[in-house]
Image (cartoon, rainbow, N blue to C red; front, side):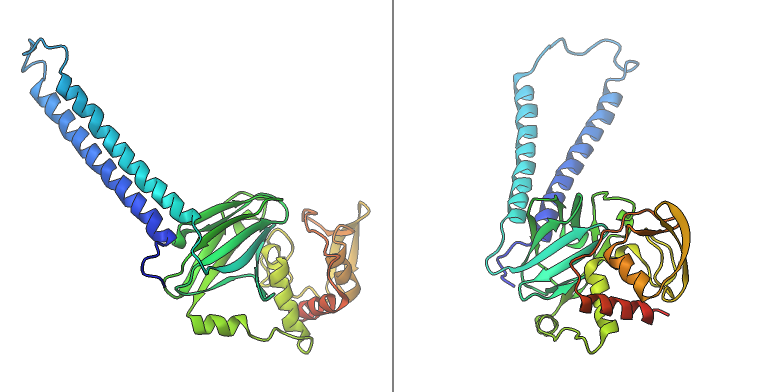
Length: 304
């Protein structure tokens, strides 16, 4: 990493510590002065004022200049920190982040996709921010970055992971009933490991269940459906294949079997039959090809 590069973490932390220190000194000064005045000029100690002066030019100049200098100092560090957040270093790795109810999809320039954000350690990364539906916000506390994602508008952030590790990534803008589940991680890898991951051969049709699991992550299925039996915005997918389901069709309750035909229809046209007690919020996926649907069905069958 370029030793002269000020990272987003350093920029925000520097501004925070400067403002915190100035605020602490001012608080201490005001508190000490207040206590001293209360003691020194207590009415019982001094029933008659010692001085009849109604102004002091130098005192007024001092208490005008000092706060002005302090405020401008805080502004300077805040402004420099803001500029650091908006200046993208040369050679930053470009990654596209798409937010949708209620999951993340990260797309790399070579076409690779993932539901976690993989980045190399020590290299600046530029994250292009897009939203498929409603307002979201890309927020990674460890790197001090937070930026809104607005439908129809492209936004961006950048940061540097200075050490390997896994760091929480949240949506920080309320985006519906599944907002709390819109959580993933930034996986910071040493450069050699990152390059190996980035260039790894994707799962092929030879392993349709694994390909289906990969698609489920990319499409955001796991943002609404669990695979461990716990309820979320949508019903759990654990053991769903071949089981009876209570659904609403044309406004009438019916019982269906979750076979391949039903599950395919539930993926491509989820509004036709809505599982009882769950909201009809799942979007359709008409863009999926036959091979992708078969992979998803193989994955669902494997969840037995």
